[in-house]
Length: 281
Ligand code: PAF
Image (cartoon, rainbow, N blue to C red; front, side):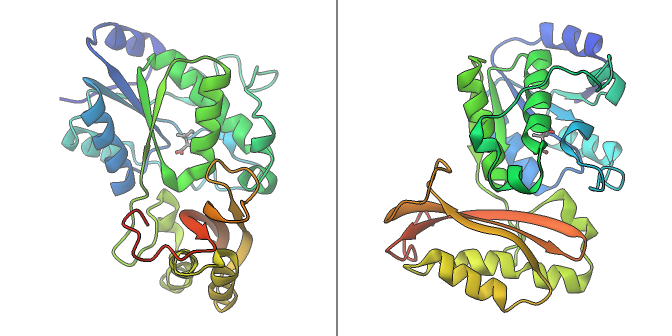
């Protein structure tokens, strides 16, 4: 049975009673099938699984969707129960930041945190890495699972764990998609039917990119043809998010707004060769 705790003292006691390897799945709640995939990966890899549910104010800028971000703890607990999660840690803001956010010691990402999401949302990765570091310190996991949908976040967390010698193994989980290809996201609930139809241009653009020797141009063509989407960025980078290679494996990343909802997605591509027919595509 899944136990839900809200305080760090209850968490510490429950964690001390765990035996074997422990995996953590950090989330902001509003759990969907993408989170289920992360939890299942954690279950396969560890003896015990902790899911954290915390809408982290530190990673939202003024004017972003902190207030309207879905908070559905009861439903999240039911998902965790179905997936055989051992422990849910759902702290309040005060429990996570007992001394407040002013003057807080934070984890600053290296230059990789200033591009793409970091350029569009300054301070975002400081918020993410700080809370993830704190969640690791509180849950003391052997491993942690993160989805590939937030590809840059995954890369930044991996880098932090290496740079700060955190000793947590990071497992990545492929992006879970709805039947029509839209990447699952807690923010999809904001989309009207018209916005959702426009948002489909994002997976279509990724697919076109994988089918092309010039992934960027192919994806841009699809996005340009969709007036209902406002593209924030579209970029090709190396698989580690360095500069794009002249040829070979790369990653295409897209951020775009449908109405007021900002969506991100990404896929592996190959520069100079189509990926269609590639079983890993
Ligand atoms: O991906 C998310 O849901 C959040 O960025 C995370 C990793 C839970 C940190 O708040």
